[in-house]
Image (cartoon, rainbow, N blue to C red; front, side, top):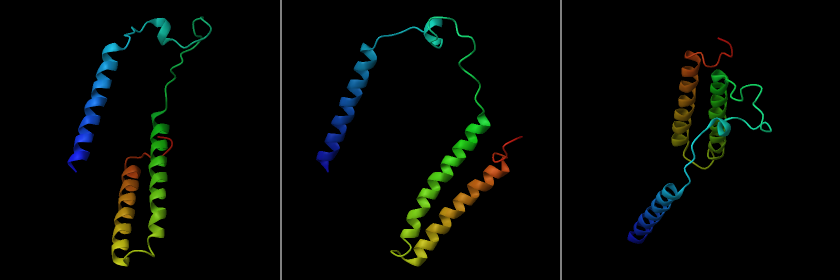
Length: 117
């Protein structure tokens, strides 16, 4: 156990030293108009490359990803039904489904599931 702790400390110290050296030795660059503009063969761009992004679309995407991961977590619960105690399995499954439903209710209450306002 002491060996693992010492190795962890050594690894943390070495990684911090490397990060410090890279910050000290890195080339500092100043932002100017040419570097911040999108590349269009040396000409000035015709329109802005930084179009506004729909925040509502982003929130819908994050909600989809969260529920997609939760579905991936539900699948092993089906497999463990045969292998575990029914009381413990139903308690954990109920808690997990309850958390999903509370999150869904919160999103519905905040009108995050409506596509248009």
